[in-house]
Image (tube, rainbow, N blue to C red):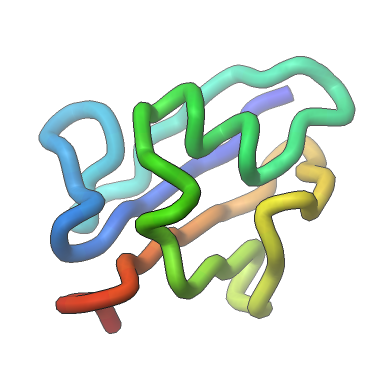
Length: 78
């Protein structure tokens, strides 16, 4: 499945997880937000706010094809 992710403030990394444009990643069926965060090398402990399709979610949220994920840090975020 394919999902898109945006990372804000200190979590942002050019061409990996940026805040300007969503980056698309392919994940196995049943993957969670935590799996996606690991793939983009974002430490789950640094994340305070998670949105999946514009609704607040948790790291254990199971993703679906086409989901849009946004991660914001504990400080300097949204």
